Length: 204
Length: 292
Image (tube, rainbow over all chains, first blue to last red; front, side):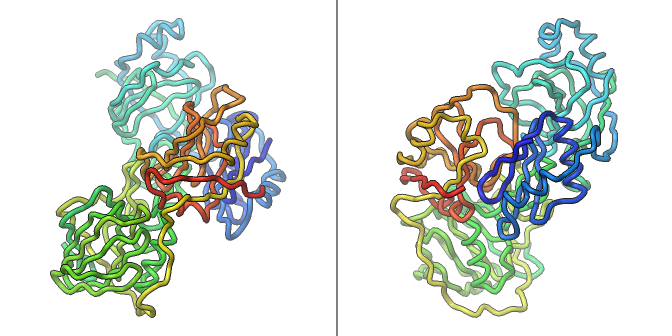
């Protein structure tokens, strides 16, 4: 673990892998160090945003160093099923990249449990990880200027669903009608860090 | 439509970049929602203090002037930040001071001679519906109140108990000269060459016209990386100096993304971020190394 200050109001905690990030996020969410106002989990790091009037990166780093991680401790979160029509524009490309047929891609996507590692990119966009690496594919070489809301995609070690129409470079394999983001809902994001996700194939 | 205070501001001309802002929505970063809020927070707070409001009441953030509003019901207003020439029904009025707009009065803002962003606050605060606890328009995430355009009616909340106690605040306008920003290195300064770190503190940068509430983009000597591997996406704080492959740094402002995929060489001191938010395209920016 490395603790890297981000100016006066941030501490970036660099961890070995995503499992450790999730465990540290869970531990610090349970007992937030004094003066910490926000936690931002990401692929390999956890950012602690501080109120510089109350604390400083050095003091928070001390607390982080003494935080015991429970191996495999995942934040308590719901599990959701997401119904997907697998007719994405990049399904054939993903099949080619992975050396599987399109049907096998769908089976790999629906056949394992995914988990929300972190959110970013836009409100409600969850970065999902699965147990095996069969679906790891590069981003599209040319991002699309317009990806529709509900598009289900893959990029690098992650899966994701676009909560609203936006530009995007992920490989699109399907689409869902699930409401990923609703400001009237609490929490507004369907996929919060820790949520377990099962994809279920449905007909068009 | 008027607010629970019974009055409102009707927008007759919106200017090039006008949004409603308060102090933002902290605590939601794990859901992918950034804080947003006023780009120059001290100026928003000052405008509210002048009017006896809560410091975090919502006001209008105006970029490079151009806003004209008509009072619906009488309201007290104050303008802070970039000192736009200010006219009430054609008569000149001063910035950083409290003005009474009777029902139907028109207030118009010219282009400020210095600075970029002005705050027009109204006693009682703007009472547009909050989204996730804030009335800030997050331009990157598309969250918060609708954009302010010609014809927008901004309802005003009830006046606070406290009366304004001063008529005017003696504050310096934003500088027209070089802007100097204190920077603490990290978290990813070790991804850059020693020469890049020297360059950052030795050379001047110019603020690009391609700047907005997300970031102040800079033009100048490229900052060269020593480590060219891909950086996994990671959390970013306000004031981060992110360096994309072009080597030209961007200072992240109020609507910056929650996470980013390019290394941050250093972070602007939170006290200096408002200076960065008031720098105009073409203005010179220099970085001074602060102790770490």
